Every structure is written in structure tokens, then in C-alpha cells.
Amino acid sequence: MELVLRILAVVGGVLISGAAVFSAIKTVILPRAAPSLITRGAFVGTRILFRAVAPPSRSYGWQDRVLSFYAPLGLVTTLVAWLALTFIGFGLIFWGLEGHVGVTDAMELSGSSLFTLGFVRPDTFWLMVVTFVEAAIGLFLLALLITYLPSMYSAFSRRELGVTALAIRAGEPPSGREMIWRYWVLERMHRLNDVWTEWERWFVDVEETHTSLPALVFFRSPQPDHSWVTAAGAVLDAAALTLSSVQVERDVQAEFCIRAGYLCLRRIADYFGIPFDPDPRADDPISITRDEWDEAVSFLESEGVPIKPDREQAWRDFSGWRVNYDTVLLAVALLVSAPPTPWSSDRSGSTLYRPRMLGARRR
Image (cartoon, rainbow, N blue to C red):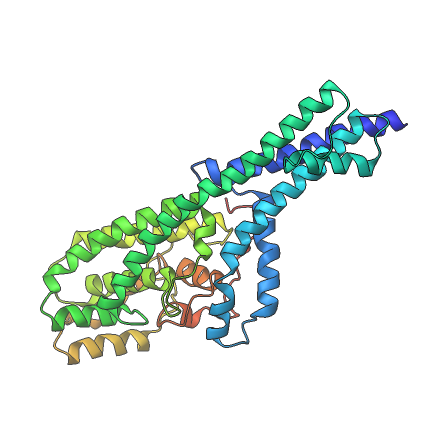
């Protein structure tokens, strides 16, 4: 009976430690969106603790200060989970391979090997081989996270460069209406094409980095009232308003920007299991009301911005563009606890679907 238990211990230890290594490879090395239950579990557990300290009922300033530590500590918790599983897995292996070694001695040998302390030495050749393997895995996991951080912060810096620059063009908090108004007042409407081109590239970069390095989704901007989600929503709304409601020459680049934007948000939403309609109808309902749109258009018109004469068609066109990103924009804003911003996080309340951070991806 004891022999069977020791065999099962070796098999279980191999599976546990293998799962930790495989999770690290999927999280850090694999260049695609590949959810790991261990990584997600670490972030979910950390999220529960942070939400207990900073519930939605507290002020946004308090939530932002607390949640700014969430993503960094989530990464540390992930590393601890990998090391803990490796420690337990190899402890079971040592106990199963050496008949006269007790559980306490096996765990002591595992800890000494994992952290390369060397205060416990194995008695046999095969135990020495296993010790070397565990030491190599421990160094591998630590080195993996260290090399992971420069890539992550490089992507974070690129993302925040666009978010900060947008504050100059679209106000704080940013809004599509504000952006169009500023470009009109400064007689730069013809330069909006450059904005659409720049943000199309920004969306492509964010889609690639925030699905292959999903912890980036939760890294908050240096400024409390900045957020990559609300910045994305402001640019998309500005493009949708320009295409649908402003009397200017059609700019295909704005259409490309909207498509890049909603594909980016959808793929991030897909990773976190947020449901959405991949092919919505142009007349499907959106979170923006007709009165809100009328108010924005009337403001632009009062400032001299040329508005299309057919308001009914302009509203239908705006709704038809917005429906492509409306659901995912609000859900991702809720997921990251984005700052209150018109037409995005200001309406992501409790009635909105709350995305799962742990579970199967949407198919």
C-alpha cells in the first residue's frame, strides 16, 4: 500500500510541478493569448483582496490609489504560485523516490533545492539529479519573470504615450465631442486623418500586447484620471461622430481606425470571457441615448462645426458605428475600474455584465 502511495506521489508531483512550468511558459514565452488557470487564479485571488479594501462604494480616488498596486502584486502572486507548486510537486517526488525519507524531510530537501540553498544534500544519485532539475526550474522561473518585465513596461510606455498625448487633444477626461471641437477651433480638421492613422497603429499594438501579456490590461495610468480604455473610447467616438454627423469629406482612414479599435477591444474581451455579438445589426440598441447624441451634435453646431442636415440619418449612422464597440468598451471599462468618463465608464454600472476573470474563453 505504501509503495502505491509513493508511486502516486511521484506522478502527482510531476504533474503539479509540470503544471507550474507550463503555466509560466504560456504566460511569458508563448506569443499569443493562451489563458492559464494558475495565472488567472493568482490574479483573481489578488483581485478579491483588493476589492475588499477598495469596494465600488468607496470614492474613485481611493479605488485608484489601491488598485494601482493590483497588477504589480498580481505578478508577484503569480510567481509565488509557480514556486509554491514547484516546491510541493518536488516534495512529493522526493518523498515518493526515497522510501526512508519522511514528508518533512522531503519538503526540506525540496525547499533547499528550489532556492539553491544547499543545506540539505541528497543521499543517492537519482535524488541528486532531481535536486539539480528542481534548482534549474527555480532559477528558470525567477529569470523568466525578470525578463518578462522589460517587455511589459516597454509596451506599457508605448500605450501611455498615446493616452497622455490624447489629453492635449480631447481634454481630461477625454471625449470625442471635445476632440472634434478642439480641432475645429484650431482649424485643424484636415489633420484628423493623422489621428486616425496614429490610433489605428495604437489599437493594433494594444491588441497584440494586451492579449499576449494580459496583465497589462490592469496596469493603471500614472495620472488618476487617465485610462487606456477611456482614451480608446474617446477616439472611437470622435471617429464615429466625424463619419456620421460632421459635414466633411469622407475619410476612409477613420473607418479603418474604428475597425482596428473594436477588433482590439473584442479580442481583449474574448480573452477574459466577456460575451459580445460579433456581428451586430446597425439598428441594435446602444448605451448612448438619442438625447445625448443630440446634445453633443448641437454643441458642435453652436461652435460652428458643419453638421450634416439629415439628423435622422446621422443618428442612424452614428449608432451603426457605435454598436460595433459599445458592449465591449463598457465591459472592459468595468473590468479595469476605469475613471468616470463620458460615454464609456460613466455607464458601466451594476446592471452591465460583469466579466469573468477566471473560466473558459468565449467560443
